[in-house]
Length: 444
Image 1: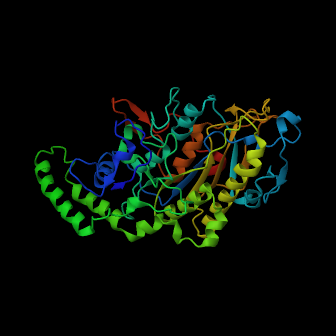
Image 2: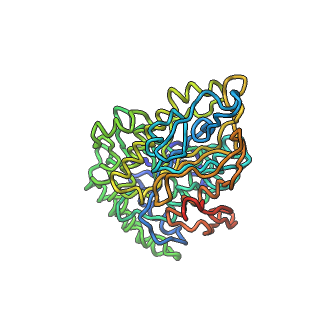
Image 3: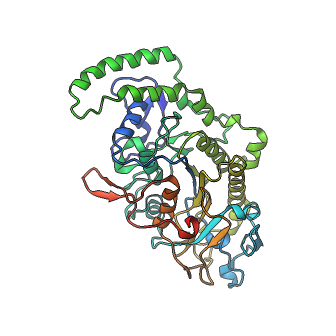
């Protein structure tokens, strides 16, 4: 059975994500990959001229500590500055955490915005805001009220010429990775297995045992005969393109190139080691393979652990920062070496930062007052630290930037007009973003 949509969350279509995309048995009544491809195109009322760009996003769910990473305050009192020291970087005048030495070495290829800010300190509403640009006070994980950035890309971009899906989440979707009212066709394709696993394989791209390609073609012919009847009653013309999308579905299932793009085992051992034999490292390596093959948007899980209410410093020093540092450095360097740095944007962020003051449990709590977002590549202006904060890294002292500004910058790279509007299931009209402009220091 081919099953291409990750966790069994439910979306606004009232369809289980796991049951949205099922090809293999190709039984009548199932929602097939061909249907997904067909619906994706037929539902698109607005389409941008395609730009040959892509985004890899690493979302550090839980809230990474900005004051311990990119906005250290060495002159602040001890209960604010914490344990970590600053180090210099490849860009004179820019200093970051001692536990990010690999990023320090390639700072000329990075840009960090230190003045991202909003007002919600609760995980789920903040995550929904950072993934969609919309506030959802009663957000429930897996139930987008508005479409994720990746889903917008799936709606307005097409990779039909490559046979690759437009939007992929590795190994599964984040809390708010789905399409809401855009429909199940714009949900992410997920691998549902860690690329770092010894038995890593993406069964979604193989026909089931006992189903050969000839048998699939026979079933396709049966569906074509049934569609003749459907076309006679299809006043909207929505079935007329079914054959074309069935061909795309079959191309994806049968394409050696598509299967190889998802097979991280083709990478040399030394390359895999460079990224780090961690979930995050291998997620990023697979993401690089996918954008190189034509995927427009890849979302990578960071591995968790960022919600450091207790013992903030030890897990950062021993695990969180080293694995993130290695993965980002390898990914950005690899993109440059392959000539992809102008085409592919890397974005790293969480839903908020951490409190400047260390709590009684040696931890830091939730803090949306100011926090950081990292960018690399995408044709943007690199080698800079954008914005400044007060003496405690609590609030911006220069131009603040909203979640909408961060997302508008991503849409800018993708060539998507974020002012476009869509209707939800009740007929209400929503722009992609209600507010926000591309961050001028990055795009000017």
